[in-house]
Length: 624
Image (cartoon, rainbow, N blue to C red; front, side, top):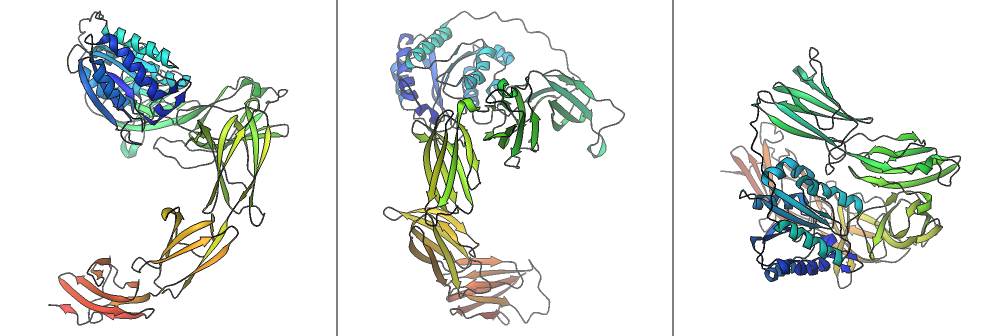
């Protein structure tokens, strides 16, 4: 099976051209010599839906190779989405292991798995041997560490591993992998060894920095305790302990708590073991590895710093295994090369003898991050102001995105809410996105190694105030703001429920849609805002406060005992509630109210006049 990467990154460009176009040519050229000499099928992933981790498609089953026909299928693949490598290998494995002869998988990918699965865990050496499966990996134009994340597939199966970076080396890698797949010599199959019958549950453990990382190979401390009542450890039993990377434990059936320790961090998980169980548990630390240069520990060097301060920017945790973030200070020494930190966003401050540098990073689980140093970075300071008043902005947010091949990447490099933020960034092109309220501006800039620059940015803004008149006491207004671009194309900019404060917007044309309550008709106004404007828009609502009751009932009504339903003049249901004494804000018009109390039904039609509050009493309106 040929497994081909159809993710959006295959449109990326290298020195010979776009990767997908180079791959099509290399595949067509490499297949011709193997016509009718090999049974070959085709699987693609990430080519049909954007952001879908289940986008895997079998395009052709393994049949005697017709290179022209298979090349046509390859040419129809248009890169679009994510990189579900594990799912694609799973489908290829199912196809190849339907018979006992096994087969080979040629994986051509330009990026690592990004669908929160671990391909290394899918294809173990034992499974590959039992299924007679080989995987040849072609890591096309990949970063070295991304390519290493897939090398386990070829190592576990005895396949080839190639890292081509141009069309010629890609053709050579494909040809070599196809030749290796055609070879008929197979390793001798050893006679099966009789397995010892298991009487106790078996627990196999592994620990990982992140959900997509391979298992940690050392530095682990495992501890297992048996749980009794109230999930507390049984005091009469000593814990089971191990320092192995992948320990196995034979335990009695029951409830247990697993603790994995790595450096100063711990992860816990509770499991229940049943008779004859054989289960594996992957414990995820959700840690990132920060790589620090040794030169930082030399005070006499330009980049020499003595302390690092880690300030978490986001306290939210996303998984059950997430570790609490806290501000941490570490003292650097000559041996400080790596620092583990919980995944998340950080501001890192380096301090030494009055010198201060700061960086913003977003650490993904299991990611290895090289913190930039002064020799590789430049510094930029932003001076943000209001274009009309020349004063600083009130509440700006500035995000920085790297630019590659003329397009801004989605990966955020830095963020700040300071009035005049400063950043140290690696050399390259960037886009700064400044937001102040609903006003926004994108500013391109370039960082050069060792240079300090200042970007003076004046953001054009306009202020909008909303004046609500004649709204009833039952009003709950909501304002939708749509920007009008070009020939009446509408782009939703925001939805606001707090209309007491002034709204900051970018100058332009807008459509304002106000609903004074969920049951009132929308009021629409189009406006034009110029730079420096402070415009007030008045909305004179014509709604009225209408209350409902049934006064002739002897028993007091409680919530959920009664159910109200309101229809407009066309018969459409516009509101319903179990509230015993509701009050609504309604626009002028004719309505029908229906109340249900058990099997009894009350119904009455009434008319609402603008701004004229009234009480609708359904006494005597019982439907018999």
